[in-house]
Image 1: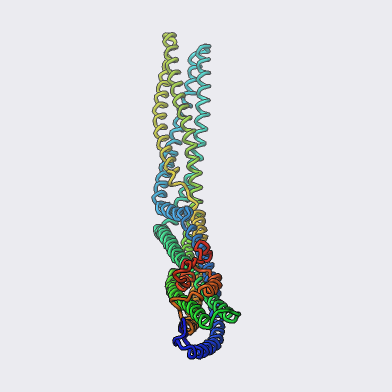
Image 2: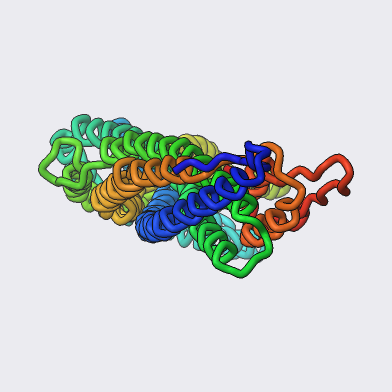
Length: 599
């Protein structure tokens, strides 16, 4: 029954007063006997709710911690994937493929230029062979002229020595021409084989160009787009995972409402025990004062229970709503996943298989290309060496021509000094001058042939862009890089389905655990209502009850660990009479070690 504060008996009649006091004491005793079992029952109910609440929220916290670990591991894996596709090696792979495709696309033009250069080399070699033969014939005629000088000089020592000097220079010239002839012959023999190589290369080009290099260029572009797409999806998944991690972390912090609620309920139950202990202890207080203290303390505990219920409901609903809000993000992880099914059109396996097929198609061409380029390089080196040697030999031809001209002038001078006796030698000198002129003409033609040979050799050598490319190796390196990135991506996403599903299940399980309105809220509401019925706050506590009530409330307050409990408690602190000293606030807010931001 609800108790009411009666400061003193209503009647002034002594006889009546004694009877009323006896009846009043009987009422108080009866009420106390009825209230004590009720308080004990409520204590047990509070303990049951608190223990069940603790079990729910501890399990929910453990589950959320597991979800946090899963998401954290997923973020780490996805970040490694993102970094893998941002490396310079991936760009180098695309550049290798594009460079190889461009080299193959230009191959017919390069091959055509080489063939024209070979024709020029063949023509220059043939011209040089004929021109060297002319030089050799001229030198043979000059040797005859030397013999004629000896005969015409009739043993003259001066002319005999002069003729011997001519023979020495002619011998040197013939040796030089023989060396040039050998080099030109070697070059002429190499040209037909090179024509065969170029014909083979031209046939291979006709089979694969432009379709293979175009396909390779398309693959390079597709690879670049694929790489960008994978990187973007990895970033998107990482962003979603980070949002989930943040939300789960926030939810983990908010789960403390369960522990806070449990503590407050335990404090209410302990307060009920403190009240019963107080009432059972011997006391000089009158029954009405005890009744006032019991009602007031019970009202305080009822207020604590009601306040705990209100805050728990609000925070639990917010937490439930927050957890349900994570669900769409968990679903987004599955939507953003990259397919690992090789049978799907956009599957990683199919893409790599197509790329490998392109490499296989290019491999046959690049093998022949390497062989043809190697032989072309050898010819280019020979042609370049021959051109350098011919430059030296051409200087020798010019020197021989100059020597022959000098012979002619020396012969003329000697014949002039001999007068009529030198007329026969003059004829020989005229022939020598004619051969010198012939040599000069031949040397000029040789110089032109040399220029053509040099230009052709430069064409065969090509530019730096035309250097032979080991396309098979370049594409293998590209493929290895992309395959490595794909493997990183697959490893990073291999557990995405399981991880996302596990997170979704954990969130659903956690939400069901903390969405416990019927299991916790309803029983707690009934307990708070019953406490409110048992309690009665006394706005003006009698002076004789202040000290005892203050001690009892102090015992109850000593267990508080939250600021909100103290705030509720202050409203129930007893007020002293006007003559009494003011009650000191028993709380020191600086010692609220367990204060929580939610309360």
